[in-house]
Image (cartoon, rainbow, N blue to C red):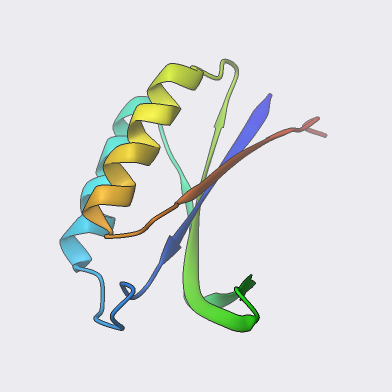
Length: 101
């Protein structure tokens, strides 16, 4: 089983809130394709990274789905669409092998 995590910024690079519809549309797509999801939205996580000598920060939410098969072409295309929709240079989508207990 594979756990897929999508890390999404609450604001764009100019500090404007992301459209709520963008999150709702993505949740709907993931539920339809994978049968469900987990959304960590109540208390945003904090993303930090080195932005050319200056620490950059984002408040993020995380969406997770579990799947038996990882279609890398589909996920790559989704990442590109999300980068455009959320006005980001890069959106992180990561996969982890999990053993369900």
